[in-house]
Length: 307
Image (cartoon, rainbow, N blue to C red; front, side, top):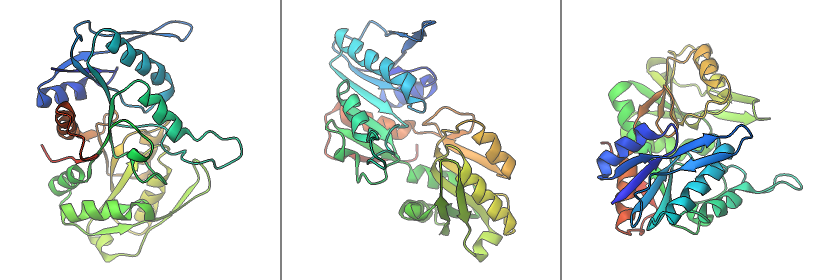
């Protein structure tokens, strides 16, 4: 029997996942002492069981040590294998040394995870120059692909959608979502000069003026890319766009700022708990968990099929 142990905030997704996977769900209790230290408490019925800890890593630093404590405690309590389901995986952007003395955090964080977990499942990680998770993880690492679910949501909710990718790097991904949804697509041109300084240009397209723009993005953090795109689209005379995002990081006031810029709606997956969550990842996570349960590690990429 697999026990899914949910970190704070992840119980709703954990319960949906457990229901689909035929697993038992429990909670990881984290008590914070006044000095900032953490006390982690797990259920005590883990002897001989497979354990899957589900924790999103939107704010990774306060979670990292409790993750290690939880994994090691599960082993001390007799768990057979301990895996990590991290729908949002942090520390993947820094994959090389951009300035003298910088830490290259992607492989460092991968080693940190490997020291405590037997396998990893994540959702469309934000990889740049790393071709695949297998290039930095030595443990089995599964990447769930959200394109089918995004396409299904678009087809059901925005039948006249014109899809927009945030930059040239997104072209292949956006093209796949557009193919699955049977809708046209365009790609924005983006230039970045800092963490919050982004400039976006919108292509000239008759389709954008007759359909509903749907801006796709894998991560909305500062929100500057989405805000710039919304402003440029509205200046061009389009309808208010829908923003469809995989990972709802929304640092600071990003969510409110995107709405204030003129977005018709913001929709996200439940990789990070947020009121905008409307696309469930439970079905795909259940698939990955089932294959890992039977030691089927032949394919590192699991496409999420609509539930």
